[in-house]
Image 1 (tube, rainbow, N blue to C red):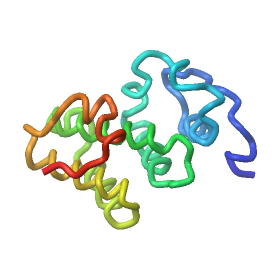
Image 2: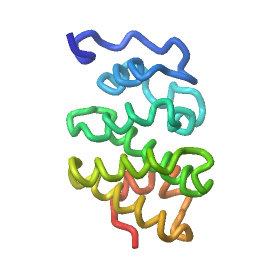
Image 3: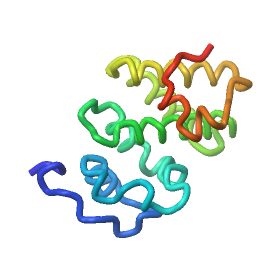
Image 4: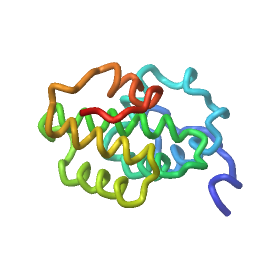
Length: 143
């Protein structure tokens, strides 16, 4: 039985959801709307613990919360790059970028391109674009 069939039963702790809870919510995001989540929930879930799950969701064109997952990938990338990879391992980010380039659609290819561009030119960081969803709402290649 898939996550989509079992339905979302809520978060045990919305501030620290499990990968399974996040995945279940992503396929039924109207069950708990984003505005009902804790403040800065996007920042809270954009860490190493959930990045693999968020990446899977962002790679799935059928996921209703795909744009939210992509937004979290932008936060994760910017956080790692801006902290010189003290916040997140460079190897993990590089692997995600490579997977997006090899197997992702245009949306993921743009994220990968923008992440590589920010790696090369940190001065292109813009908080609104990377951390407030600007590059998700207005997709474009930086550079």
